[in-house]
Amino acid sequence: MDPQAQPARRSRGRPPTRSDDETCRLIAEAARQAFMANGFAGTSMDDVAQSAGVSKKTLYRLVPNKAGLFESSVTDRISRFMLAVDPATLDALPVAAALGRIMEQYGLLTLSPDTVAIQKLVIAESDRFPDLATSFFTDAIVATQRVLAAYLGQQCERGVLTIEDPDMAAGMLRGMMAMEPQRAAMMKQRALPSHEEITARARHCVQVFLYGTVAKA
Image (cartoon, rainbow, N blue to C red; front, side, top):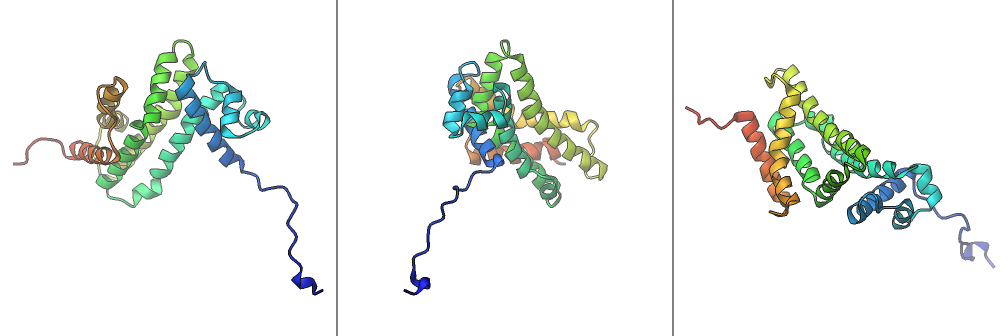
């Protein structure tokens, strides 16, 4: 028999494994869903491992404790925001468009059901777990504030904008974008805005921020 006519043998090697980065993303998503459903105290490492489809050994190797699980569930979302507003992308855009992009991505992050649920959890459990609030404040609020403040400061250095305090201005712009619709949703007075509504709000916030509201002569 012609050896070339024989069917190829199946490889008996081990199946391909996920990278640690991919596994961490699965763990972060499973942790986020568990925290939203059960709260911080009601979430166990074992439950997250099972939901993520990983062994407990793998989970503890990548994330050693429940506080780390919460941190990873937050930073996973923040990392996506950072990728969407990286400096190279912003530099290629006019200031109004760049600010619009930052605001839109910030709105999509902060006005998502997951973020609102996690923020409610943090507020509800901050007395029992103060480190939870510190972690969220540092990894989410400070991190997103830093991105916008850095961009505004850079544009001031280039002479494009004139802002006395870029950090304060960044906080004001973030509040204009998210505070009112987020609070309304958290208090169950209004549904969270759609993607289209977030885009329109971002555009309007930038227009007011850059050009004000005084009628032109």
